[in-house]
Image 1 (cartoon, rainbow, N blue to C red):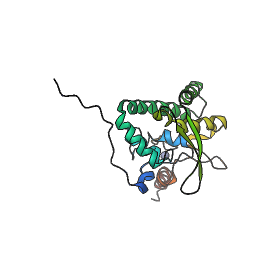
Image 2: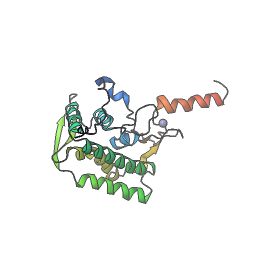
Image 3: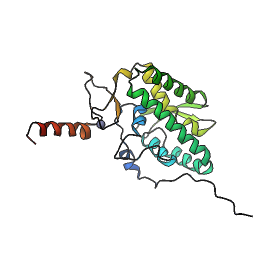
Image 4: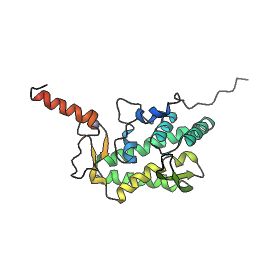
Length: 218
Ligand SMILES: [Zn+2]
């Protein structure tokens, strides 16, 4: 008899140091769903959907789940590797649909319909309980505690954030960073609607320096 083959394992990243967790990813989108879209695009960081472990880290960093639930998800992924892999593939599919929606700022009919279909697909198959929770810093957040398939519930807050943007008519204010080499998207929350850069400290600064050089001062 041949030895039993070991089940496929979900790759585990080293446990991140808690304070640095948020710094490992960029949160410049002003909206949760846009931060999720940007989780594929940062050249300096890891793709948040590289594997299930990085996805859980991102969800933790984005405060979609707390550390306790993140640990629970990691354990569950070890027990149900196929389910975790499917959840990861599913998350990539949702993110691609949301990126298309963000990049067209809602003006492309096909992307809009596809995003709505993806949002409803996620919302439609998840059972659970909605809760109001108080965070450690005293702020209140809406929480969703999945009842059935826990993996399926992971995408709920992200698609709800996108649904809110559609309901509130925020899409015309969704922009792509003016740096052509940067793929980040963000919600322009400025009063005059003049935000051009994902981040002044990186893309904005680089553009300023280039202008200086062009004027022969730098
Ligand atoms: Zn940028």
